Image 1 (spheres, rainbow, N blue to C red):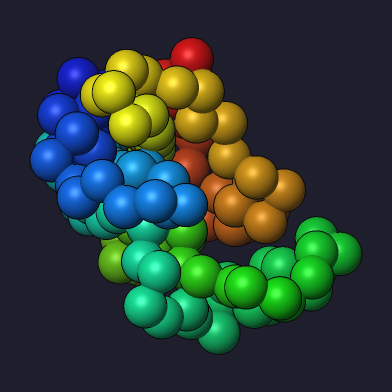
Image 2 (cartoon, rainbow, N blue to C red; image 1 turned 135 degrees about the vertical axis):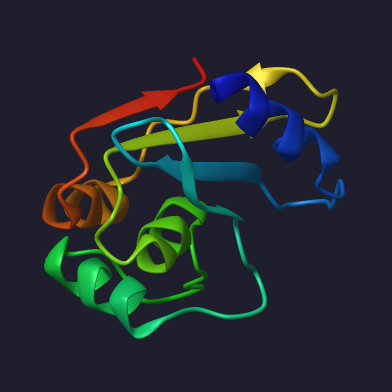
Amino acid sequence: MLDYAIKKAKQLPKERGKQRVYAVVVDRKGRIVSESPNSYEKSHPKQKHYAVKAGCSEHKMFLHAEMRAIIQAKGKGHKLYVARVGYADVSLPAFPCPICRLAIRDSGIKSVEVTV
């Protein structure tokens, strides 16, 4: 499933200053429950909630791929896959930020696999 997330991240447009990150949430049987890229056009109240909870600034807040996929999964997620690719389509480390780590913990997701 991480390969699928990498493939989807590579399909995202290359835009200067924007990360190409893609997250996929699956259930216990490995079926996709939700998937999402970073969204630079909008945010979500949960993103703001967890940013405040993590002690992070709300400046330049955008909706992270992990957060968006968790919100869309509506509590049905078991595992989260996160892929990040660079400008040259090379996989880069995609460790969730403090904001997303809190949301992952609270969502009930049991494990996370990321590109390294």
